Amino acid sequence: MAETENKTDKSAEADLGSKEQEIYQQRLEKAGKWREAGFNPYGNGYRPEHQAAEIHAKHGAQSAEELEKAPPTSYTVAGRIVAMRTFGKAAFIKLRDRSGELQVHMKKDALGDAYEAFKLCDLGDFLGATGPVFRTKTGELSLSATKFTPLTKSLRPMPEKWHGLTDVEIRYRQRYLDLISNPDVKQTFLKRNRLVRFIREFLDGRDFIEVETPMMHPLVSGAAARPFTTHHNALDIDLYMRIAPELYLKRLVVGGLERVYEINRNFRNEGISTRHNPEFTMLEFYQAYATYEDLMDLTEEMISGAARAVTGDTKVAYQGHVLDFGKGWKRIPMTEAIREAVGGALSDKDMADPDRLRHELLKTTHAEAERRAIETMNQGELVGALFEHHVESTLVHPTFITHFPTSVSPLARRNDQNPEITDRFELFVAGREIANAFSELNDPLDQKERFLGQLEAKQRGQQETMDYDEDYIRALEHGMPPTAGEGIGIDRLAMLFTDAASIRDVILFPLLKPLAR
RNA sequence: GGGAGCGUAGCUCAAUUGGCAGAGCAAUGGACUCUUAAUCCAUAGGUUGUGGGUUCGAUUCCCUCCGCUCUCACCA
Image (cartoon, rainbow, N blue to C red; front, side):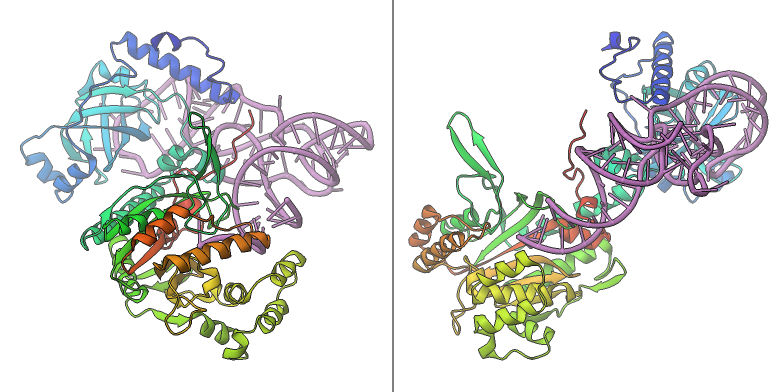
């Protein structure tokens, strides 16, 4: 690789502006000078022995005098230079490692000839430094370097130090720059990590086992969504990227894995928005001998626990609201929530009457395409649409909406008292769906009918329908114990706990259109 | 896909009615051994996203295309 260094590699620098080009060349020359001085600008094998946070923890409370009197201890740290202030024959630099930042004082007195090599450092370079710690006149704990080692030459300029990087497009496309420039970003992803870890520990502690099921499916199953398609060459078959793992996980319950969960990606070929990324992370779990009501209890416990683990409190500030994840979330049947929202005008009889519902829905629907879609909806779909229209966005605090219509719940168990509704709930927070759960339909004959209903809906022109999954029926025919299952959108939960307005802020590399070159 | 907005130096932002494209940071040279957005002097850095049009003259007005943001629709 060394021979590329002093050549002008036009292809690699095609995206450089003229100023950046100049900096690039200057830094290449500095790297060359390091080589001449016996330092490899891309060396390997350097072992830092200490971290910034460790040093702050150890000496943060000591005064300048105490540090001076204490027996001298030498530390070896490594990191990226994120700030630099030079004074001719001395300099202060700020070194950042994974634990935090530490100021390092570089003095010609202490470094001798190595100081000339240090002067070739730029903002963004990585270096290692060794020396004792002291406190500056202004009180900052700092390492006084007696030895310094260049580790990696950075050839491109860092984003501006004061305003940082604010251009959202660059932040998403070049997330590494975002992470360097905006410390909050790292905190967001650390929180996301804590969230996922908490959930795993929570479920593991309840005897669930984590599994991985296929991401490439021969059928569209487990949800109503448009899939991505792909192709396997050797088998010469088309496959769908999974839109949900549901039917595979329930096959495992049939197989005797009574408590299973999976945290993994789903892919849906639909619109992109502040709440939708084409690939997103979903937790799905299934528990035999539980009902949807048990899962409401479990969900409250898991999510309020997660809120505390991630943010330190069950009251969470989100986009100007305070969301209260403390126990005792509201549980409201869907029709009741609709009735409240439209002012009590709909009787039970009205709720069962498609024409009455259609009339109600058309009152507030003006877009022509939407009105046409409403004309072909059945009673259950109309109830679902009314709910989304009038209620969903008003549910700020965690709220369970229960008893979804059977026709919009093709995998959920019918309610024993009323077969037109299911033993299902969705959890809404901040006006968004966060979780979806139900007592599972384990009657193979009913499931067959529901699949046929999906085919019928497709006939009517609905684009998001499930395929008929023969093997899944066969699995149910072997017998699935009474089971309840749930899906939770991890990205959306992460948004709530990190006060993120856009799902792109909790996904490291959200999908963007590639730039034309 | 529809609607609204945005795109100027590596980064953050200016530019009056359409009249010589500017500043700070970063960079380069110089001074400086306790700085915290260090300071001071000097220098350099631009295909104003792309391609067209109107005009004596376009960062500015109009159109095309590209990308991003918000929003509606679809959806989680």
